[in-house]
Length: 411
Image (cartoon, rainbow, N blue to C red; front, side, top):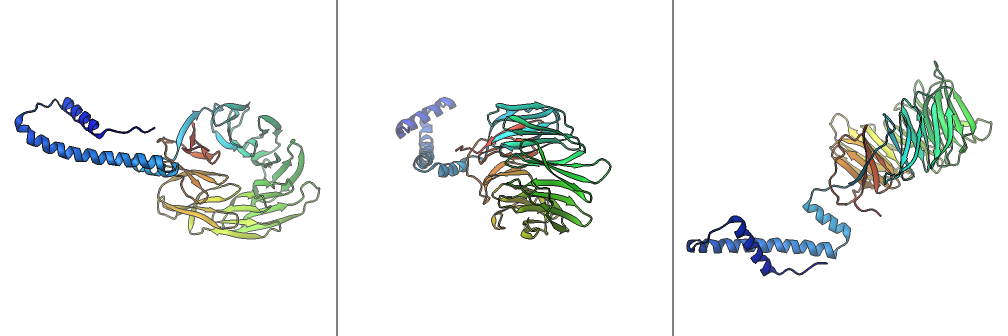
């Protein structure tokens, strides 16, 4: 509720306070000077009161987003606020994943899952030398790169414990809880991809005698498998169809020049591939479709959700100068921003992108419009990664801390 202000009473009060603070001793000779100062002070005070009244009127009579934009003119802009610093006491080398709105973490002593209020949901202790974690929906897989320990979880339960024969290279899991593990035989380059259903039963296995297998991904319907491996001439994606049968019909996509560093199955059945100089799709027949090329740029990082992919591209040899680009799965550029500051990490979820820069955390929509949110300043100094949890929540992590940050207006 706003109260009416009596201007005359306020002027008298301020004048009295000024006299008392300064201990002024009035004399007859001071009267003309005093009157002049009084006129100037009155004008300045009325101007300030007018500005305050305008701001109050604007904040009351306009919507909250406009009000926040105006308020931002009078304070240093900050797009996030801190909620809490969480303690994941699971050893060193901690890595994090979004578990359907909760925070899953793996370290050298095991795994933990906390909700965004810091309540512990799950804890499991086991040893890993180089922990890694992948999640999809309410399922996640934790594994020891270079070791043999693999554990799979759904919500708050352990679904499967696997001890591999070879050393683990990578692992992945889909929304249905099906997962695959890539291992390498000791003393050879032979790669083995093992596919398990949601109950932890082995249903399919692929042996790759040539080339180093980097990763493997399962389709959303559990029927197809994509395997990424390096060859003498570049990269190769092998597509296996109907993996619930004993047959092995598959298609091959070879990429010459520009190594493929990541693949992901899209809901429509195509494989999204990210290379060091381009972004493209591979269909069921092994045919490639270019979405975006950036041969004249250096890839600084990327992030993708089920709706879009974000690329962080540097100009060659020009410090931090570069741009952020968001692209949908049809190849349409949704947004583009130039920048000249260090981008440390970024993460996408739904239709939101969160960017960790050297000067703080910023929330964007898929068109790279920054959310006009006013909030208190925070420090994420030392953070090395950002993880988007929802459109409104992210976690900035470092070797020793995990700080939850939010957009100022939660919906």
